[in-house]
Amino acid sequence: LHKEIDLVFRNSWIGVGRSDIVSTPGDYIALDIANQNIILLRDKKNKLRAFANTCRHRNARIINGKGSCKGLRCPFHSWFYSLEGQLISAPNMETVTNFKKEEFALIEYQAKEYLGFVFIALNKNIPKLDEYLGNFKEIHSCWPLEKLLTVRRREIIVDCNWKMFLEVFNEYYHLPFVH
Image (cartoon, rainbow, N blue to C red; front, side, top):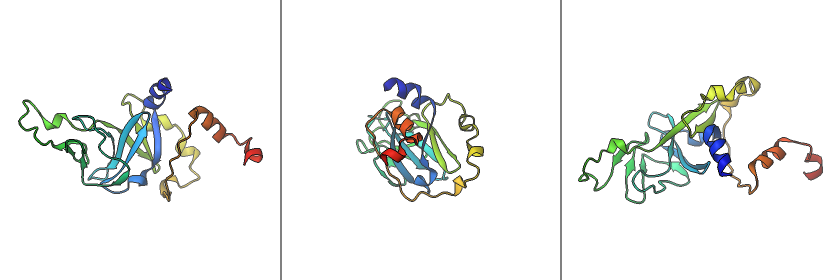
């Protein structure tokens, strides 16, 4: 499993849902993808961003769930980050020799919107999203994908091998007998 996470999920684009799950500036959702805690959010300019959900000071998880905020505050020592990931304040660090706030921004990952979907890449050295998706747009051109709206989000944890789950999900031979 660890090998698959490293070789497959950490080296490709991962679809994480529709872009309207974070639709306005300050909206965020905490995601756990490929053993990585991630914050997906909209910054002040409405740009989609993905950050490691860990404070740069002691690696505490910054947020849980989903909601809206003006910035991100670590619950451990109260370091505060802008929606763009920059460290704004670090209480009691002003006396630390050579401490520079600009060196402690949140770790950022690639986040892209495509036809209303959100894709995240944990590795910067992979093909561009358009290249990765190939003819996805042409295949789905008969549907207005960019106009779809999310009406609900469900997260289901399936305790099995992900490859077998996808295999069964994508083949319909079993439908008349099981469902």
